[in-house]
Length: 241
Image (cartoon, rainbow, N blue to C red; front, side):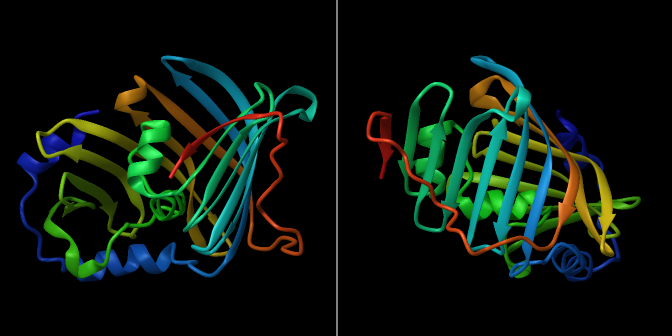
């Protein structure tokens, strides 16, 4: 989707302060210390992966998260665990696993998705990734506003509506190549807070997209059991440290 190219050209500067709308975006979805449980369906349509599965995810603020994928009859297909220092992915169905450090560089090396653990968590909640004072080139047309963040080797774009909801995230290389595009077509209100209901993620290196729909969200779950899980010694493990 080339929406951002058009927006960059067409948008005119607005009188609405960037601080105002971005603060609403962060505060609306800000549950940085909250427990979040979600359940739904995920569809993979990638060059080397094409299937659908049910999923459930548990998130503890920005500290840790676990996600499980299920096939027909509730059969466990795969599990993912991550915190700021470590991640593990276990493909139960095909009997292989990936472990490593959840930095942008290592996750990209493992999956061709240029996001860190914290990036995943914040985008899953519909949050802007960076501090407000680091955002650049704020422009607006109608009820939508575009923010950008310039990194060392990339530029991130955030399209936000006037209610503070993230509508689209896009990561581009410095030579203007789209690396990742995430669209948020639908939100629902849960306990008074807007939370993404549908996501469409387009991954350039994987030549396809991943779509996700949440059908249940709760802000509490049992935290007595650890999120990390045992990977049998018989499993082939790929390491990214």
